[in-house]
Image (cartoon, rainbow, N blue to C red):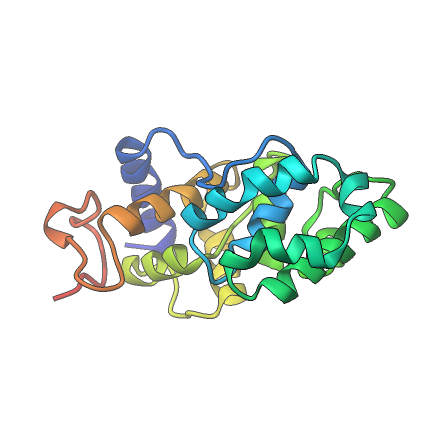
Length: 209
């Protein structure tokens, strides 16, 4: 079986199991998604969703972030971990967006990764969810599942992204990644995966013994 064939089987199985492929982060506009994703680095989406209502209430617009202070952002995101770095990135990111991009969130991975604190994972999420372009978000769940399924031999995010882009139908790639997160949490966990109830057990190349 080729990797392309494996990928199609995985796409179909996950689509049936998780018909609603949605991002776990809660947001109402592109800027909020960009900020929430930055906060989610080394932090759970659930924790970020607890923090962002107060953050976005205090800073509802790009201008309000720019006119605020790093210190105030720090206090509001403290429980997300690495809060000093994240607050500085958010503050600087908002200034760059206003000064260089006229307040418009870029629609390409290349431009998004020029923003302070924005890596390919964040950029792909924004490109896929906001602009509905083909995107591959290689978070820890996606990387783990791709390896177990046999779609990649790497655990390096950029290499996994390239491997998945090569085998996934472009129009399915973004939803596929959302579904790997859901499946990784519910079934294919890092420790003690529930292989016996996995919707992909019939073709998974590296089931956990």
